Length: 198
Image (cartoon, rainbow, N blue to C red; front, side, top):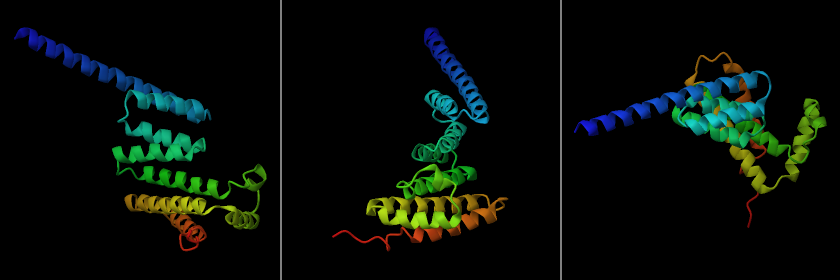
């Protein structure tokens, strides 16, 4: 009986020790990733955060920080997945919904501008951008328009969730204006505007 108790104690201690070591390693990787983010070394930060998730996939901050880093790297689909994981772990953290909305909005605009994705279009004035968007709209497939519509709807939903979870947000007016702008943009790609295939 003493051997069984000793064996259970040793196993328990080793599990606790491993958990502590993993926790320290996760913290160290997250700290290093933050340093890389601050230095503008986004890819190195992403590598550290992914390693951190490999050690412990249940740490909310790691998923959230990875999502933010992936947005910075313009890897919006991956960012969306990381932020959804963060939300699963900690659904009441409002900023996760905001960041998820940003990823979805950027993904939609990336699809909208996929035909004309050069540096000159980034520096164009608002009138030129509106004309380019209309021109690109004609070149998009029905599937592209549906994906854009889905991304815009999701972004709107997540911005609204952010405002619900953080009603006293300092950027409330800005977000409400953004939601209104996205609703206007959505009208160009909504299913009512997309002809049904026969």
